[in-house]
Length: 124
Image 1 (cartoon, rainbow, N blue to C red):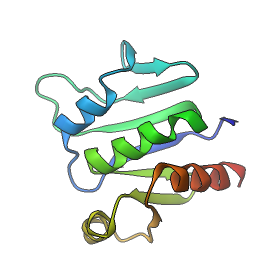
Image 2: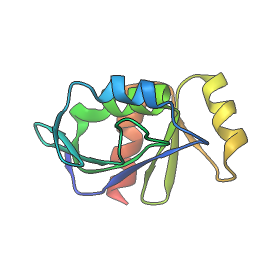
Image 3: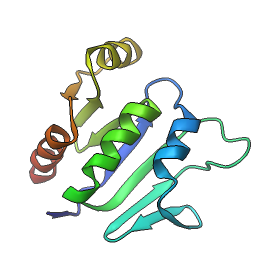
Image 4: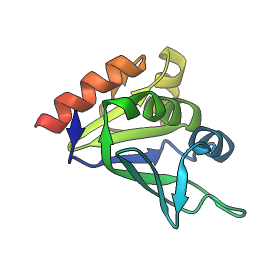
């Protein structure tokens, strides 16, 4: 699946920048863009002195869902696509995210569930 629906990543409160950097380490960089294959991810500054993290995936495929899941869970960020707000992880992760926001969360417990949620939201 190729999608034209952008996906945005936003912190619950403050992203875990160390984890974000580790998850994204394998991607190629060109300025503010990270990429591989079809993925094109625009990110906030991640260098020395970065305070928080946000990003937008302008192009992505189903193959990127494991990366997105790890980024959301380890980096403590939420995934938004259209009107859906998705939290990834186990019950403890979700409870922590719920304390930080007022919107209703959709939960993905693994990369496959995330793929299904993203596919559904992209089709809306």
